Length: 595
Ligand code: ADP
Image (cartoon, rainbow, N blue to C red; front, side, top):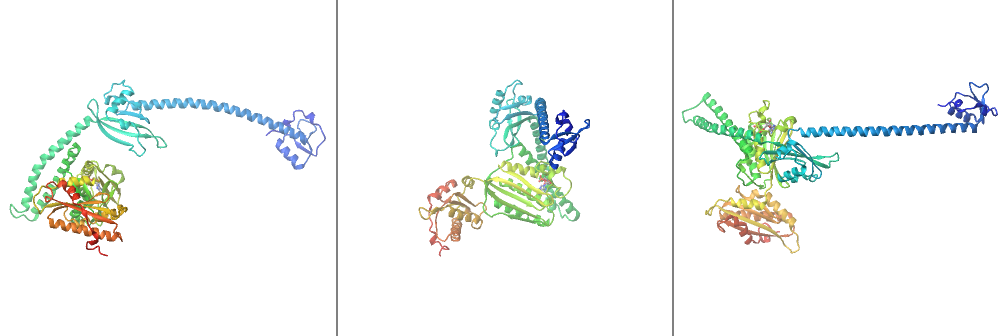
């Protein structure tokens, strides 16, 4: 604080009228001003310690002194501000230099990390241009160490990387993996991932290359070895199994008591051993990419219900309730029925093994977009989160602690994954420890025309009039020229598909929506009379559906049917002939539609 004495440079100048108020010269100027305002004094005396009498000055002079003081303060503040600005500028300059050095050091560190990686690494910027490419990548691509970006880009484009270099849309996959053969005939595993900034914009792509040729050779040798051993074991095992079965059946005389028990346990172990050998052979075939798959049109809904039925007894013995919750609608997929059954069996068997008595297992099927999704859900022990990522790894179970289900080989899920993948689908699961697990697999929905063609191609050649195949096509047309019947046709077709199990009796029969307002039925292995009965049942279903959904008949069903071998020697021509024979069915006159 500035003392008032400090402000009075020459006290002699202020010897004026004595004032009513005398203040101490050591007081800060602010206090003096306040004292003057409080007392209302016009002039005041200031007692200065080194002056005999007080110095007198008026209010106006006091104000003047104060303004001078403020002026001084302002000057000091200005000085301070310019000093600070100067210091700040120095500091910023220093920091800029420091940051540049730090960035340079970091960049250098990153560059040397990239160059010293064991894997090849290429960094693309957001425009798909190469930003970084290490020596390993050049070597793996068969390029000289001095190759420039243009040469690398050309080689990559040649190897099929062009799409990868162009960052796609936000929704496009952000990472992936594939394999390519390099110019030097080495097999490379390519892993890529998009790089994003803090606002999630794609700013480039990182690509990692690894030479897996030797890994693959070692893996193939191991698989060949396992396959050879498994084959060698299968023959003696089959004869042991046959011998035990024969002894148990009494071929060598009566078997009773302990001997029977021992033999039965031998039979069980042989079965498990055979399962293990089959699993080993399957996994080897899947890994070598030569698992034979025989695709046919099959009904997924029927497969689920049939497989669940097979497990009813086993589940009941374990005190578990098992059920199939499907729509009952024919759900055609083009797949290998034996292999899909194998997947379902493995999932259901696991569910039984890992579900304590009193639990439930539900196998369901639904359609979602272009996929059909099957689910095996249990209320069992669940899978701990820390091991969930290993579940599809082969032999995973080997590391498992003893517990429920410990008798498996640890190959079931790996095989299931392989089978689903070769059908173009995917497999996944959700699990909560002590609550249960749901294993899902999806399969692509097959195009109905493709399904129909494949199904007809697979019909066995016959001349037997009792084993005919019929194709029945029903197309709904509008009863009036301007009417839009799409919704109405959709409703009736939906009813027909949902109820198809009730009027189609053979497991290979099909009901397919083959157009917006068209449904096609394939009726297999029947004589003309039976086929005609099915046709009548279908007509009845249409009448019921029309009656249920509409008060007036907005729709005209057209129906055409062709039979093999009666109408053609080639089952593939059945849809064409059925279309030619198509005629109007008057539903008003059909029984059951009378109002
Ligand atoms: P396996 O059944 O022969 O052991 P899998 O590959 O079919 O081999 O399964 C691997 C492991 O995954 C099992 O050992 C078990 O630990 C776990 N698992 C699979 N299905 C289930 C399930 N439904 N509930 C709990 N754990 C499961």
